[in-house]
Length: 99
Image 1: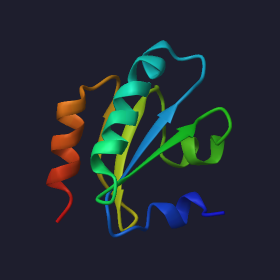
Image 2: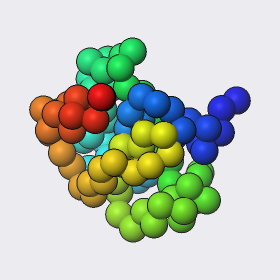
Image 3: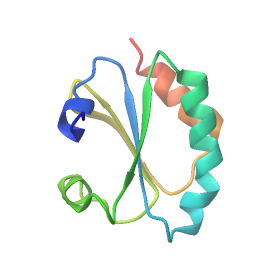
């Protein structure tokens, strides 16, 4: 199984959705994240991290509210956003970080 650290070392963008099962806005974002994952398949990865089950990752990246989205590439944070966001904006940010 791939570790979180290995996952974010990818040379393709990795969008990480830090969420919680009890979070209303996270549930709202779920279909948006699924659409983004389908749209970006092969160009970027989309990963969901449950902060209640992965507290070390949540603490390492100082996740204070959910949902929080972070785009990693080669282990570096390229972009970070807390709160809901529309599909178009997410796709723009991912596409901008492809090259």
